Length: 114
Length: 116
Figure (tube, rainbow over the protein chains, first blue to last red):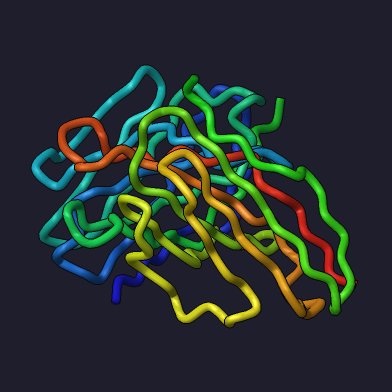
């Protein structure tokens, strides 16, 4: 089955700096890579996703890059703000497979210091 | 309505109790999921329903029994749970068939379960 590794497990940045989280996956059949943000006591919420036919996607201060050959993808947050503090999970999935099963990375706790 | 709702928010039960968790969505999504999330860990998939049929069971113990009575509702029946089953139980839904932008799993707020 799929295995997703995520690094770092914790990340502390100064407000205004950039944050980068990296994930690797094992199953070359995976073709959908979402990133979820989970604030304390809240539900996971999708912040950005990318499909394997695209190398990069950007949405305001958030960008995701995908290297299919190396089987890794990264989340970049620029101009971090205190409200970016949360746990971020990457995930991998194979669209079209039964149930579109998401396999999550272990999570990165991001703390943005004012 | 673009939300997944879950009831109850919190549940405390003894090891001999029977209880049920409920999940509801009115987005027309035909795939629904149960996840278990322990503190400081990622969600772990338990069950997947596709068009009201169970399509994935991740080797979950039989003390957890899912049910999908219709396309909007998903239940998780609990019986004879253990203290280690205490966790946040998350429901999610997704539009099927997946194509274009329709890949996102929408999560509910979860039920925080404590087993005494």
